[in-house]
Every structure is written in structure tokens, then in C-alpha cells.
Image 1: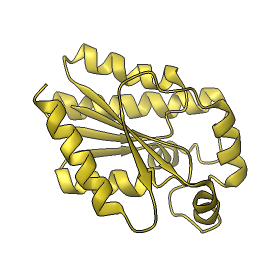
Image 2: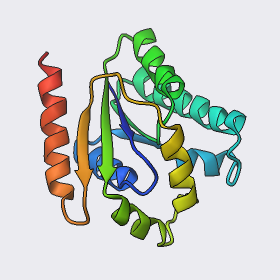
Image 3: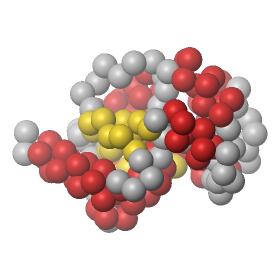
Image 4: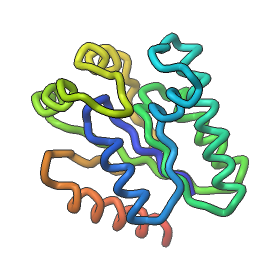
Length: 167
């Protein structure tokens, strides 16, 4: 199974995705960490983003080939980026689920003003991606992130994924 965790910078998606991967005992792939490992820190041209997403697909494919569930954490702001993972799931006869994390813009602004270990995104980047964000047409779970509801988010996600397992 592939679980895509999507959302705008500062939404809390990465914090949530790390916690979900830990709770579920799954593999975890993060776009910022991949960008850093590729030496592409600070490179955000479309071709650079595609290189990061291609590497993420490769890492997710390795997890699938080893029979592992993988949580993939990125903005996934373009349908073409989501389609890369939908194609991967089809190639491996695997299921794919999407979880979208949102947060209040005031909270996002606060979060993006704090130093973050694995992300360079600031409020300007947030605004740019927000204007380019393509609507989700794929069925998904929407979660609202606050500064004190991680357990609720994790429980909702776990229940959602479990219910999908029985469909």
C-alpha cells in the first residue's frame, strides 16, 4: 500500500506523516529529505522538483517490492506528481490512499516563521504553491491540523486506512 500525505507547506503534513509512519510501522519517504540527499537543496525549478519526485517514486517502489507499506510525504500540489504514484501503484497491483492535511493560514504563517530542520519553505513559498495547487479529484481523507490534535488526526487516519482495507 502507498499512502500519500499531501498539503501546503506549514500545514503539519510532515509532522503528521512521521507520526503515522511510526504508529503503523511503515516505511517513510519525505520530499525535503530526498531533496537534501540529492544535493538539490535550494533548487526548485520544475525539472528539479521532478527529479525529487522521481527519486521518491524509486524509493516507494523499493518498499513495495519488499512487501512494505510506504507513506510518502510531499505537497503533491500538481496532479502530474500524484499520477506518478498512481501509476506506480498500478504497476505493482498495489492500493493507494491519499490524506490531505490542512491548517488555518494564521497557524501556517506562525509555523513557517519558525526554523525547521528539513524544509526551506517560508510564507512566500506557501503562497506560491497555494496559487498553483491543483484540486484533488482522487478520493481522500481531509484532516485539519492544529497545534494540539495529533492523536485525533492519527486515529482518524488509522480508521480511514483500516476501513479502506476492507473495501
